[in-house]
Length: 304
Image 1 (cartoon, rainbow, N blue to C red):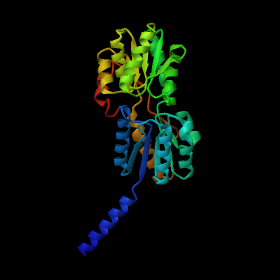
Image 2 (image 1 turned 180 degrees about the vertical axis):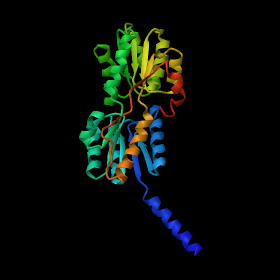
Image 3 (image 1 turned 120 degrees about the horizontal axis):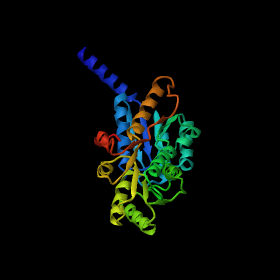
């Protein structure tokens, strides 16, 4: 009898494992960007909480065709849901529409809020990027910036363009954006060159945390210590720069939420007859500066 019971328990365990929800998360890059490991951690923590499996994939090159292929490959396995960042709706849209048409629910994250619904995604979890940029520009203007420069590390990413455009809308100036790439050495070199070419620039917005750290080095290198430097997202390096007075503020989009919430949303959708929040979930923006940096510093690079 004991053997029969043990065998039955083993079969039940195998059956339960086979029925576990499986989700695939696909983002547009990771590599040198400290942002995405926090998103991945959020997704894995949520999957563990609901007893689901999470597969995480990214295209290290940032190539949109490569990312579209990852979405297509995930769709072919018919997971219980796909979570995908959306930096280029034109390039990724067909793959996302195909996933939806095949019956796979999709939640978009991070970038692509404006295009999410039209592609058939259930909802979006992320920061309204234009609003975030405008908020940053408004503050920069109030803090004395007369002429700005925005550093964009992913020229293909519409969300980063929105950040930069919003920054200049807030400043009341025409867009002045350069492509600095995701390579830290190139970021430093291109930033320094831009500042040397136009000494009237007194405000720099970095669209990512590693960009911010490299920009701070470039500013020091060219001897332009009076430049107002601000950035997006948190990292240990950015927190040190804020503490040292070299960065005025950074925009916190709480990227853990961008990994965690989609898994929870898909779990509720799949197990509660299509249950969904009534709207997309904005994960930001919020300001981190000297007034509150100490309270979130330990979260940088871990949960934010």
